[in-house]
Image (cartoon, rainbow, N blue to C red):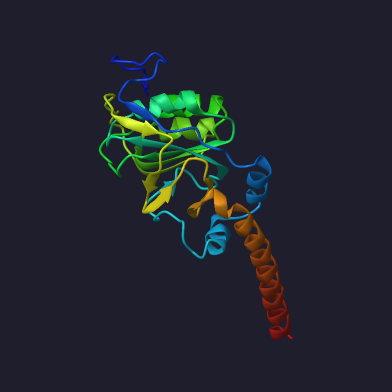
Length: 225
């Protein structure tokens, strides 16, 4: 449960010297995030041509987890949370923390204290391609997290790492500022340049699915007579 700042070398800005900060990135329009909040990851994945969805090994911490936000990407050494700690200072409201922890399951790179810190800064949730811990505390906090595993072992705090650079999560490359939708089914990531096309396609998918459900209901009603 202890996610304290480590000792080490720091830059003039206060950042650890071995944590790379990528160039400034543009975050998506809030209206686009609000529109996406009305759709499931399954629908978003369909609108993406059934691409852009990390593998199913990264799952929600509890049933009913849901979040939509702008990717704040973190590259962390397997089992090491120095870059994750530094990411707290980069959070803006609406950010979705996306951590490439190399899928390592031996040590957690996020626990309840970091979850609380991210939440207090306005982050909407976190995805960890690796392990987390403090499941019960995080659930009580209500901070949505997706990860590969839950383990009790805590992380090393040595680095190196990077923040705000492209990362691979479950076989999908996610860039800073990409739109991320996650729910109990899993995760979908929308490149920023595809935002409007995806939103338009989502409206078409909803209309089509409504017609199919109505037809299925009519068929069921007919079959009972």
